[in-house]
Image 1: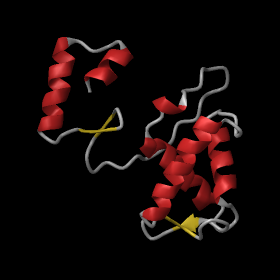
Image 2: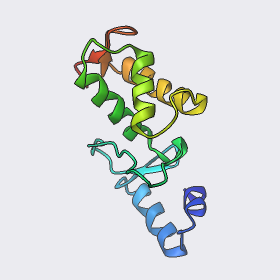
Image 3: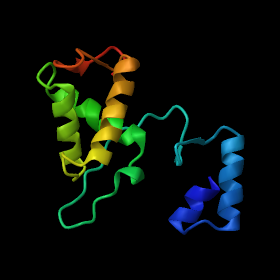
Image 4: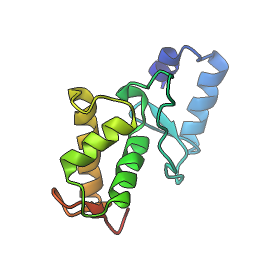
Length: 132
């Protein structure tokens, strides 16, 4: 958590103590340098507005990337393959669909969705699963 606050440049001693306390109390969870509220699923994915700087893949939480992937699959059930879904998600976030780092993270997210049952029809006809 200290690294997260340091990199954001906004961490004061008070904030660090407060965040650490909230994590200890279970009111916040920390996953892959991201803080989240337990039991609150990611409700939407944010796409960059025209003319604004797009966020690097490291600054987009896995839950948000997965929300975008699930939304794309739900919009076109059984019409997208895994590769086409990753390409569409990269475009959604403003990234080049051929960028390897972004594609690798999105594909890992899609594998996780498959493994948890949130996405079925792997790999050629994806659709939302019972968990999606």
